[in-house]
Length: 274
Image (cartoon, rainbow, N blue to C red):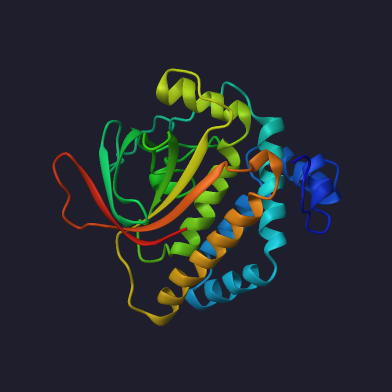
């Protein structure tokens, strides 16, 4: 199998780095070096109420090429602008930030297709792109990066709900942004160097986890649980049709975090998994 097998309208030019939207995105980077169109989209969706998020997510399902195009724009912009001086660790600040996830913490996941699984955190909060604020405050980065060793090694990128305002849809967009920014080969190498202390294959597989602390009983919130699952399933299927990403993104799971935390780890229950 060779080349891209399927291309939404105008997406081929984006992946080649010569489209008009890409040049406009580069212009925006002059003033704000680490802002991507995909990030702007995420911030927009964060500002919507639940009804607006339901409508936005439903629109994405009708026009999936938009999300895919923004993903590729972000991937290639980060690929070209990344500097080895950009650390994955959050900046040191005077603010006291409590991180629920930390290095060596064990996470147990129940109810998935493979039964009970355990992964180990390689790191707590991670900033895929430079940010003046800690990810726990900005809600722009990852809350943890984990390693799932069996049956085959996978890096797990985790985002966790901080309030009821953060729906599965918003969490999915944040996780996809971070995946776009950490999956270029140079970033994969950085993950290995900073978090594992050893090289990581460019063919490493990623899983995404969306952690829910406070599920809501509202109709719109419940609708977003289902719509975000549909959107994740469609995205995984479509991104896998491009040779360079074939198999890169494995499972995406929405998980409810158990309210009582064990002294040696965190337990999560699967709401949905694709």
